[in-house]
Length: 337
Ligand SMILES: [Fe+2]
Image (cartoon, rainbow, N blue to C red; front, side, top):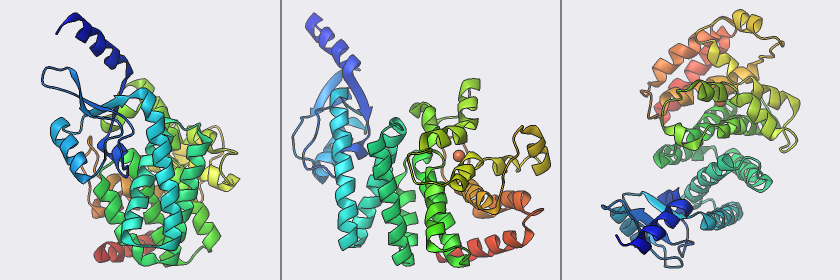
């Protein structure tokens, strides 16, 4: 490598940002020049800005780069803007045509934009768009419950970081259960669905690269255990969530602790009085099941049966009848899927 190449490489190292192939979905033209690291460990251009993006182009890029691609960080904002626009357009077209193609696009763009929200949780633009999208998804399900298995299939297929897929999976579990039990009216179901979906936004305080691995350092453990409080901080006054919803978010991991501890013990350890109602339990339980049965790079996937054994520990003392209803629901639900 000659000296001016070295300068160019240093410059690229400073300005390039890794992105995923998914960030390029639904574009007609590449919003940025795409780079990869070649065999000599040198950044090399693989696809030019404004070149057409289609299935063939994406396969070419994946083949050449193994999916490890980079763009100039100054182009990243534009990628986000364009993908926000794609999600807005998809919400509008869903209201006219509920084709499986449109629904699949909605789920893909919802996840992609959730990633952008985690990267910038202060963005009102991104938060409002995510809220509108999840309300549209809720209405889509309410109008046609038969779409639920397809939604599960698509979200599992995406293989995003668990932090991106888990809110949707646990909220979908929750809504499926609520729809069958008929405990709540439409507005209450909508509130719980939204609450469950946004409960982990505080996880955005954990560096993104750690989502794929174990949370190891004391600082990361602290950040993780504090994420329900951070979620409340991010959401308070920014989304139409009432105090009850915010309390559910604040305590959505209290029941997780019951797996190893007793409720009285948890209450004694906390200075404030914990409000742990049935709705908090439901949100929490669906989250535990979604977490245990999903693929995570650092933990073995458990079966639904194994996750229900854990849930039994949590529910059996205070909610034995509800536990039986839950077991019966999942038995029927998974038999159908
Ligand atoms: Fe959480």
